[in-house]
Image (cartoon, rainbow, N blue to C red; front, side, top):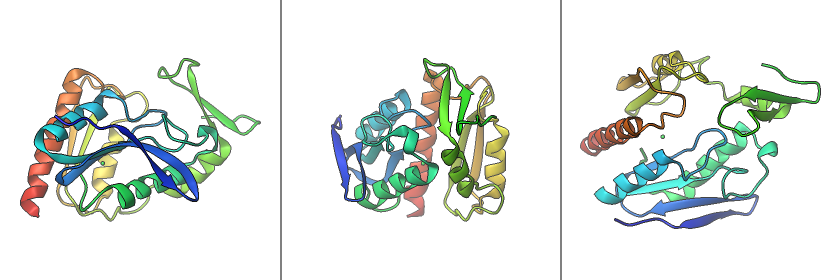
Length: 210
């Protein structure tokens, strides 16, 4: 199996992004980390091992202000991270790819068990800018096959959100996979196995379509 090494995507007008890339055949896989996470998590490495074994292209990266990438997390927004994803798609991939309270000082601290401080801090600007990226208010013009995996024990994002996404996307080939005991991070061994198997099936489907 090939193992990736850390490289940096240089951008003249934006912070450099740390990434790991495996060359291989299409369809390739891109791993997008979650909030305050990075590209070195269990799911990311499991998907890289899977792609390496089968010879498929794979990319994982850190958003601006996260992991090994440049930038300050406190200055980030959903829009900036969206541009990170587009940069990765444009520069590092080839062909079709397989995805409470705002205090007076202008900061939102919401409780989390994934941070030593017990909460994440998001600026008011972050929240205000995020309103530009709400997708459930209108149809979502995506026509490719989609698989949504959600843990029913997710205490941060209700699994019903995945049902709403499935209803909004225009694609007819949409499956929602609910894991009864799955937590928010879906980080148990069987959760990761489900993710890899789902990606495997999706690659087979896309290979047939193309």
